Image (cartoon, helix red, strand yellow):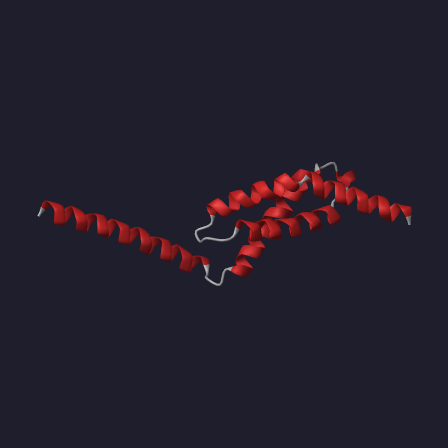
Length: 116
């Protein structure tokens, strides 16, 4: 029974020490997303990934926990984004392209109005 408490304490310690990692990854993902999403939601998904990483981490594997957790946290955040996002990636690319095309056309129209 004492071993279970030790394992829980070790997992809690790993999770506490990796909080900055979760926030850092969530902020990087947040900046890279083509659509606005709440940073707190991304952090929450990252926390789930961190908890899973702490549960599955084997300290005897030779890997550092932060290296192991990095992949789990990032994956959990992207899984959460895909669950929150009802739009496909192809549709998001088309929306971005249309927005850029509209900007170019508006610039061209304003140039021709000003010079003609």
